Image (cartoon, rainbow, N blue to C red; front, side, top):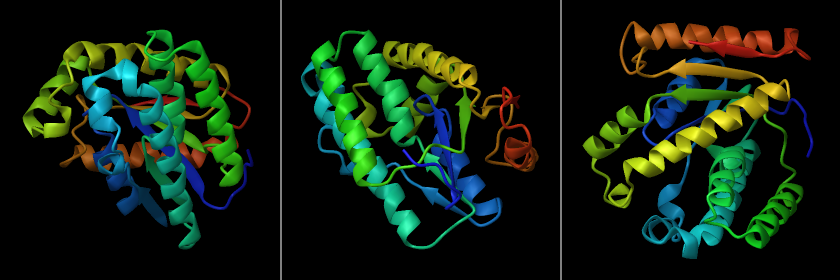
Length: 228
């Protein structure tokens, strides 16, 4: 995959209801010439099926999500260049978190996982995908995520149990460690400690993120990890 400066792709990842969408929108609104790249979960016909029967629908759900993530980002790139694209979850979260969880927990067979990885590479080549510029992890405990998810009351998420959120948390930590080991830029933002939906939390998180992104180039080749 290519890496260039046609707009920097920043992946905002985290557990269900950790605050990914809220933060990605906030950053797109307030940091430079930026665009918010949404997660179109409502466009995925396999998601509700997957939440009811994971082993049966995991492969179709993952591939559909991956393709949609790449297509949505490509649509934003084609509309004009921005300094940053703040991507809600995105293809790399699909591959490094959800597919990893499904493979490790036996929800995907080894053959399905290998075929999924092959299809990801085919999709990336077809859409000229680029390596991420940076990752932002939105942190919150599984219990907090569970409570937030239940309060927002989305019918789609009614089958989701706290055990699923806890398992995702395990693989989120693994994903983060892998990225750090690979010397990729990672920023951690604690959405329980800093409420970025209001002041002063919003301003503080924006400042921290801006400083992190400004420092990515100057610290190339070093472990680029920030916490907030």
